[in-house]
Length: 234
Image (cartoon, rainbow, N blue to C red; front, side, top):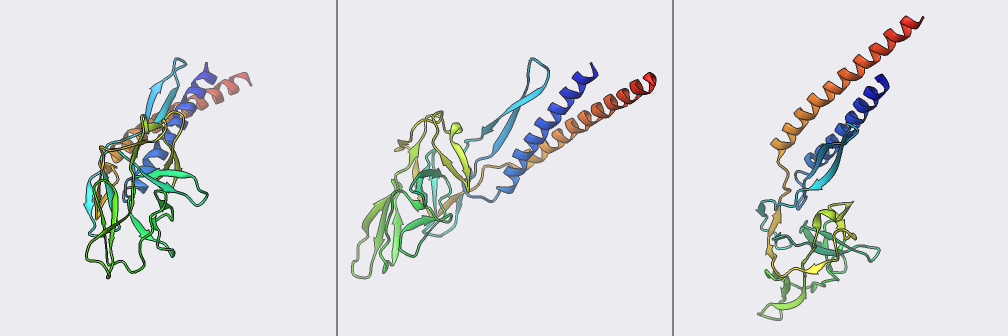
């Protein structure tokens, strides 16, 4: 019986630490553009132990006007495809962009936006339309000319996208394959804030702390019973 209590209390404490890890990740990414908060949903198994699953909060974060024409925010539930250095495609909602040495539009993580959009070296202004069309104005032309397009994509089950760090995601069998998203729009000179509610995170930490204290007391109580049992045998 004491072994059973010890196993239950230890398993519960481990799951609570796992939940705390997700809270720490959320708080650490509070200022990360486009970051989606993670939550650890707990449930009791038939054996009486705590278990849980990580869920991603897909709600949209607030949009922040940066006045930087290289910044974009996704107004909707779409994702920006980016080409990584190894040629594979990842997806992000972090629209903070810049140019590399070759004049290619890249993310601040160094990934090429879309399949590659080359900005003229002598460009004066850049416009990014709601549908993702990128236009540039050069000194030899009064009008803006289209030079590429950022096609947003969506997923049937975005919660099942695989996080690979650096605020990037990969498609998985469970998420489904990417589909062209014509409902979401791009807002130039905006970035999406992380959808992390700091006050909710603090509340969760307080609840976890109370649960961990209870588990530690159970473990100490059980350990004391073990010691008394051993002393009795002697």
